[in-house]
Every structure is written in C-alpha cells, then in structure tokens.
Image (cartoon, rainbow, N blue to C red; front, side, top):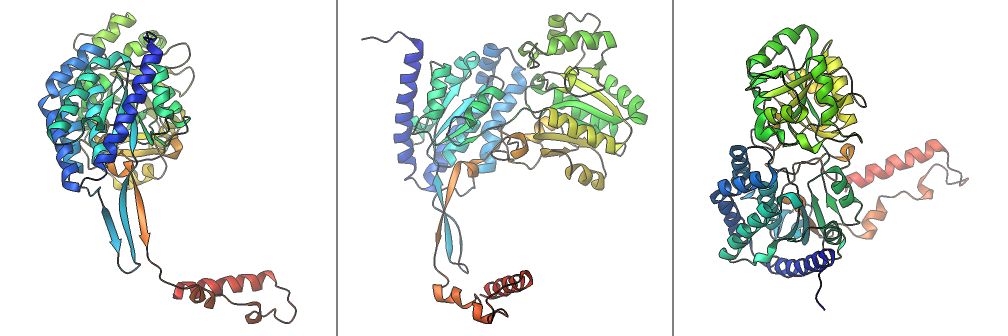
Length: 493
C-alpha cells in the first residue's frame, strides 16, 4: 500500500532518519579526537565556501534580513565557532586528579534533535552541526517550513563535507517533509537523547514538555542603558550597528534604549544624527497597533524587514527616506505598551528615567515582562556601575560597550560563539551559557577509594563520648557540639 498522507510520510521519514543517525553516532563514538576534529573542520570549511550562496538562498526563501549580514552569520557560525572549539578535548579522558584519585571521561549524549528557525536558518545548521559532532553526537534537524529549501541545501553541504572527511554522512540529517507530527515524533522518540531547541516560545516550550532532556532558549528583549560616563557617539553607533544587523533578527539585539532625563537631548540628537527617526505620538500609536497581534505576540510581518518595508506595511508616510531605525517613546511596560516587547526588527523603545537606579529597576521590569535571563547591555565607563547592574538585572549576558547583537553571540566579545543562548532558570532554560560542545556531552567519573568504612567510623563520636552518656538524653546544645566534632574530624581526613 502506498502512503499518500503527508503526516504519515513525515513520521516515517523521521523514524528512518533517527535510526540512521543512531548507527552513525555509534561509529563516531569509537573515533579518536583527531578523527572527530577532521570532520568538524570539514564542516567549517564547507560553511565558509558556501556562505554567500546559502545566504542568498536564505534571503530568497524567507525575505528576512540582508544577504550581506547573512553571509557574515554563515562565516561566524562556521569559522568563528570552529576556531573557538577546535582545541577542546571532547573525546576520551577530559581530566584527572591524582591527589583525589579520580578521572573524568567524555561521553556523547547520542542522537540530538535540532530545531532550526527561519530567522537564522543556514547559520544555525552549521553551528549546531559543528558543536554536536565535536561532542561525538549525531543530529537530526527539524526545519522551519518557510526555510526548508535553504536548510536542506545547507544540510546537503554538511553531509558532503562529512563524507569527504571520512565520516558517516548520517551524523547530520534533516526532515524533508516538515510537519508538527514529525517534530513531535523527533522530540519524543526513545532513541533521541537531547533536544537543542532554537525557535519560537511555543516550540521551545514543547521541547521541554516532551519528556526528553532539552536545552532551549527564551525570547530576547534586552534594554540598553546609556550612562553619562560613556562615549556617546560611539555608544549610539554600536547600538545602531547592532539593531540594524540583519534587520534585527538576532534575539540578543537591543529592544529598547534607556537614558537619564538630563541626557535625553544629547542622546536624541546623536541618534538622529546617525539615522534614527523618533516617531510622533500619532505615529507611535499607529505602529504600535501593527507590531503586535491581538493575542499580544509579535506580528510576524515586521520580522527581519527594513524600516522602509515596515513603514509601507504599517502605512507610515512621514518617515524620511534612508532612516535606519525607528524609535518610539515608551512610558510603561506590559499590556498597553507594545514597544516594551521583543521586536525582531529595526524598532527601538525609548525610556527616560531619573537616574541609574531607576534605569536598573526599569531593566528588571522589562526583562521580567519578557526576556528574563537573556541579554542586557549598557554603555558606561564606570566599573562600579557595571557591577551594580550585574548584581541585579535578570540577564545571563550583560554586554558592556559593545553591540549587543554581536556581543551576545560571542562575535565581538570573549563569550563562546553561539546561536543558541541559554537563559538560565529565571528564563526557563536548562543553562545560562552560550551553548557549546561541552553542554552536549556527559562526564563520566572514575573514582578510586580513599578510605575504608572503619576509617570513616573512627571520626564519628558514639553516645559514650557525649556528655549525655549517663542519662541518654541529648540537649539541643549537645547535638550542636556533636555535629561540630564530627565535621571537624571528617575534615581532618
């Protein structure tokens, strides 16, 4: 009987891909570090060679962002990621402690389910393929349907590179008939050991609810505080460079700017000088109704588009040609304040506050509304001020004097180069780190005995040693003394 049902076909394909991936993973698990690294380098080199062609395909498929910036993202996800991970020890013994007599070995998690978004489709494929294979795993991708063609072509490039390097090309594969049912099977399959989820909140939530261990991310909604100690023209340049990069598609990009009231005239003048347009109250209201849907979520029509395109869609006629970023005055957070939400487009909210303490309180409020655990940025030349924010703001990444987009992903900072940015417990994520190969392997501990049972017993006082021996009664103070004695003797071992 021939199957014509798309859902059934996609489910069967997914099961076949998982079976092939499991076999390929069992093979790479027996390779040495040099063999694994050869495969990873081949993937990185292929990414650089095909960066332009795949960027053009991604732009054609999704109409998001710019080709120039997508080329840069492909090179970053291929070469920059490789340069960071190439010397990592991920096979065999990772470390040992001769004094405490234990050794630590790397153990691949196995088969990984990789969710690929439409916002960064080709670059995310290269990044996830490299970190998965580097840790000795296989990965099966579930592609966003709108970016299927460019994702499938990227996977083809990766598979050819793996084969040429002597590996099994089934280490990396992709569902060619994407359906919700197929993704559900992928995430819940008994032979899938981990989910690496990048995408919308609903998909990430589904990954965590699947019953399979998952590493996911939450939405970004990072405020950028401009302090009086900064170099203002340079700070504005960095924010503008960041917010316009690929038309704001990376979730680490700035979503709002915050400054002290007495700095506002200078801040506004500098932003206007560098190509920003401050919307009038009427324009703010008009665009505000367009950027959010009725259910309070971001209107996908604005995602990854230029100012010109957004103005056309929202019927804003008074914005000057050549405007790089739209800036909207905002006076609150949450419902009724659309600009306080994440906007994956060249649109910024603009808040004015009394001082840095009020700025910090506002940043906390914005991130707790949306974006908790993700990214916050500030422009300041005052380390004490940086520490003040770092101890209070619920963000896993605090970017200082750098474009938040590129700093958050580790392009202009020393953070691990990554396109999956953990948000920690506060953001509902399993990690707060930029995801690297070390999060995609388990560590096996081999520990040798240091003590015998009688050695441990020697350090524990019996009732006969305690002041209560005659009565058998033990007071609270005596219990505390006994505990201190036990701890002191155990520490002496």
